[in-house]
Length: 362
Picture 1 (cartoon, helix red, strand yellow):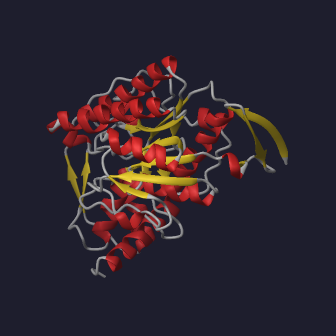
Picture 2 (cartoon, rainbow, N blue to C red; picture 1 turned 45 degrees about the vertical axis):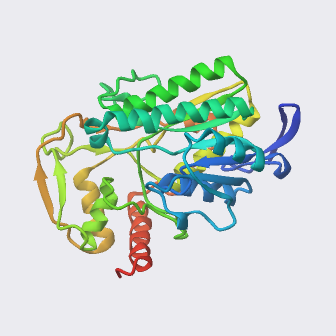
């Protein structure tokens, strides 16, 4: 075990590197209270659990437009409201003593962003600006932002590095990139450091079955495939079979949601450890699976056969989108625990079955 003493804003705390560097712990009394926006949603609820499991104290603000109250543990302070509500944020900051923010709230459906761009520039950009302003006003020094690989658009290289040109091809990607820029500019002008985490394809569910992806009409391939396997959909559409990939279908980098959540906790510790430093990091495993490989894996895990319907390519879908995770693995002691496609699917399947029981459908 290696012990490193450091300080943040004049307060001393200790970072512990345990054995092979798989975890990083901070003195319990010096972990700030963390506001989790969108903490009743899919990824946000996993971040709440990851914070609690690591001894932090989360507070959730969520308007429940797509999130679920049951996804937030009863012992976590919960405020139903919108991050655009400055009075609400000021009250939460003051009452709870917020010292850091993890920002997940927003809209995420790419085709919807094309048909309703103003919704995305409002929900993802304008509301993020309001949240950042509230943080600066309250003196909250650390900010973790949920971004996306959609900021890269149609990259000419794969795996994708953080310095790959960011040229989004839809309003969703632009709305997230604009928030990245706002954070960078704000950090230069105020006492704020931040971490941007660019997600690749998030999937799976909490291994203990405490939360998972619950939104109806989700578009994520693994959830769609499992709904088909369980009889909730008649088939799975495969969009594009003529890509320059081994089997002609699109290849994506899938990351387990619990590994992603742990990256947020470690990133926050890194911001506190070095308050003058900000970070931008890809979140993926650095390997890809095609649509057909994912569907084969769902067949294998469920012991069922999904009907597949071949469709033309969707506009703007790259043939392959795989992360280069070198930076995140070197910047923080992040060591994925669920880097296995069958495991990701098995955890998601368990949650789908539990969700059906909770809703009285199974």
